[in-house]
Image (cartoon, rainbow, N blue to C red; front, top):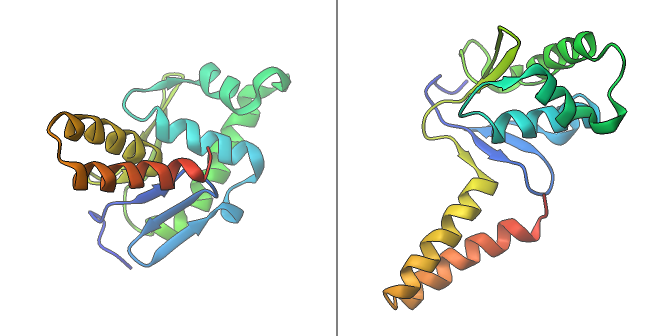
Length: 151
């Protein structure tokens, strides 16, 4: 078991995966398509609480079930269980609920591939202005490899 302060490496592009040290939760561990959508939404919106109705709309879109509130609670519970192989006794990642909202807490230093790709693109643009061509190519390669997997 890794220490609780170990960061996560989260892959949203291509097949979903979460890694912490040697522990991995692969796409097959997520609770169906809705669970994968829920995880991606929570990861990408983790900087501020998301309303339950917004989360439900992201999960089901136009096919939202009549009892979506209960269905969402059950889906969040199943997602929490699927994360246990990488959380163990650690408090994060934590899907915090309350007052009609959800918030995902990750350890500091965690990396999300989609965000890393966007950061690399931004750095490459800055490095181009400095004519640091070797670094431009390296950052552009990071972006290209992540983008090639698709979202």
